[in-house]
Structure formats: structure tokens, C-alpha cells
Image (cartoon, rainbow, N blue to C red):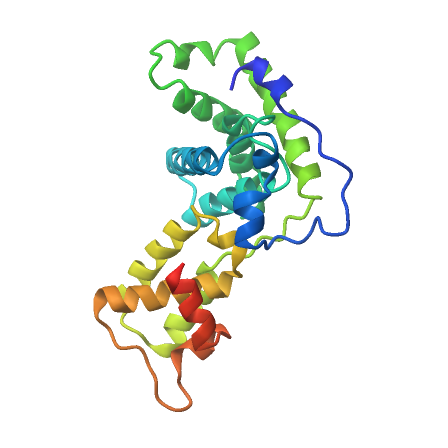
Length: 250
């Protein structure tokens, strides 16, 4: 994520009417992403996705931000790379920018300096001189310029659409209304965390992800979810059994 990466980030094309459409078919994701058009195959893009999600998790934990902010950063990255190519945009830069922006979106802001320094130390964790180097004025100023440029690029790419709904809210609300065993929420929450690292969150709405997570958690915990008339659990998520099965199968 040093200053040379600035040249590897490109400005987006002019926004069009579908820029605010953040749900895609599996076909679009796997075969028609910007990275695919630049010659990056599906397997490589999946590796890059795993890399930036792991980086985001580590950065968020070191910055002591809540999981919802980390998840928001993941969503920002996922959306960015459905409009921009990995071939032209360094994922370490975009992930650092996404963390900084996500913390503001989720009202848990972190100082730009802290995000830059911690992010740099993670990227160069195998280099014992990195912590000292990033605290040098010239190096830090170059990183700051890179991240601020990246933030403008990210915002332009997503058309300044910061309305990011996550599955956690509907999941917690349903568990409370249905008076389900509390430990089930923890397991379902972990399934949500796992799914947000994949492209499923680009294919299905948040409450569908929440429903699928609860279903899998119940199976894992061997808990029977409410099925009585007037209290059918999946209705809490406004989802049909067929739609639920599609989510779980994926």
C-alpha cells in the first residue's frame, strides 16, 4: 500500500441508472465482473476477496471497532469490486479506505492516523522496520494522500450511496420476538459473519441472509424453531420456504 499504488487505482466511469443496484445474479458475479473483463479468473478473484476480508477483520479488531463496522467495510469492498477491477485497484488500499469510511457510517469513527498506521503495520507485518517507517513524516504523508485519494474514488464508484443494511438487525429482532434460546443468536451471528465474506450478500437481501443464518444455526444447535400458527419463524424475515431453501443450499 505504498505510494506507487496510487497509480493502480482508476477513476470510475460516469454513474448510470443502475449504479444503485447492489444485487447481482451469480452469473454476473462469476462471469462478468470488472476483474473478469481484465483477465482475472474466478479463482483468483475469490482469493483476493478472502484476502481483503481477512485484512478487514484484523484491522477492525486492532482498531477495536464493533463487528457491524467490519461487516460494513466488507460490503463497501464487495460493492466497489463489482464496479471496479482488481487489476487496476490495489485491494489493500481499498480495504483500508473502506474501514475508515465504514467506521464513520456506523458512527464508530476512528482517527485517520490510527487507521493508516495500523493498516500499514498489518500489510508489512513481516517487516520489523514497518512500525518505525510509517511514523516518519514523509512516509506517513504519502500514505495519507493515498488513502484520501482512495476514499474519493470509493465514494465516486458507489455513487455516494452509503445506505448499507446488514443482516444483524433483523436477526436480533427476530430472536427477541420469537423468544428463542439466546445461544442460537450467537451461532446465527457467526453464520452471518461467514456469509458476509462471500458474494451471497451481493445476491440476496440482508433479511434473507439473516433467515438462512438462523435456519443453519437451528440445525447446528438441534433447536426446533417455532412453527405454530401465528408464530411461524420464517415469516419474521418476510421470506418463503422456497426462498429460504435457496439461501441455505447456496
